[in-house]
Structures are given as C-alpha cells and as structure tokens.
Length: 161
Image (cartoon, rainbow, N blue to C red; front, side, top):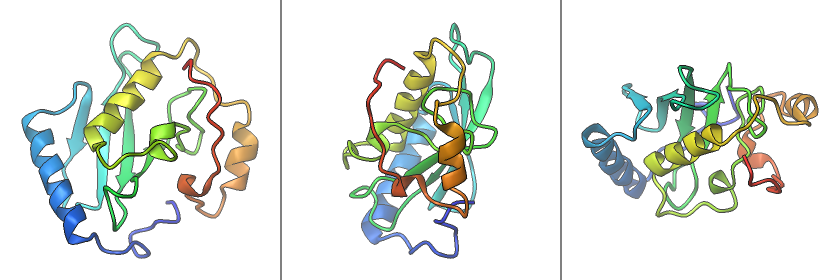
C-alpha cells in the first residue's frame, strides 16, 4: 500500500465526483481496447486490468493498474501504479511505480483514465526488451515505508520506450 492509503486520503470534491462519474459512464459505453475496469464501490480507487497488445513482448500477459484519485481530480493527476507483479519494462519499477511524464509533470486536466491507459499500453507495446530500470533496486529501497511515486522527482530522459 502506498502513502495514500484509504484512511489518509481526503474525500473527493464535487467536481472530482462528477468528472469520475462521467468517465466511468463513458468507460462502460466505450472502454479502451485491452482494458477492463474491475467494479468496486470505491469511486476514489479504480483497479484496471491491462492486457498486453497482440504482436508485442507483452501479448497474452495480464497486469493490474491501481488508480487513486486525489481530492481535486482532474486538476491534480491521479496516482497510477501497477499492482505487483509489475511488468518488466525499462520505465516500470518492481514496486509498480511508473516513470511516465503524463502522470506527473505533463499532466493536463483534459486527460482521462482512458487516455492514461492508452499511454501506458503504448509505452509497454513500444518496448524492445523486458527489463527493469537500471536504478530499480536503489529506487525501490528508497521507496520503502509506502512513499508515493508522486513524491519522486522523475527525470524524463528516454522517450524511445
């Protein structure tokens, strides 16, 4: 569990609730290909099943994303992590943290859960090798005690995978 545990999160604002209800309705009508929302009674935390795209290193593999929405979503980005076991990828740490600029510095309130999912699937699909980031062990060790990936100062230097 990350530092944004259910007990420590603030309730969603009315704007966030309305936006998430709208996104959930849209998802039910037109889900992004390769993804399945696992229905729960918690609007503030979504669990999403990710299926690796055909013709990629991840074809036939299934993973789970956990999306935690902050009080002021969509003005603030959600926290998105893979529930371990996370896929082997140069931008995905073994603790599930994802190094992807749209989840942090490049977030825009115009983005949706669907657009995040499509970006993550695109990142997975473009990978030429299944491997952990070079600094995986050091990073994961420094994240003990439930540090959120949103507390990390990411360095976005590799846009090839």
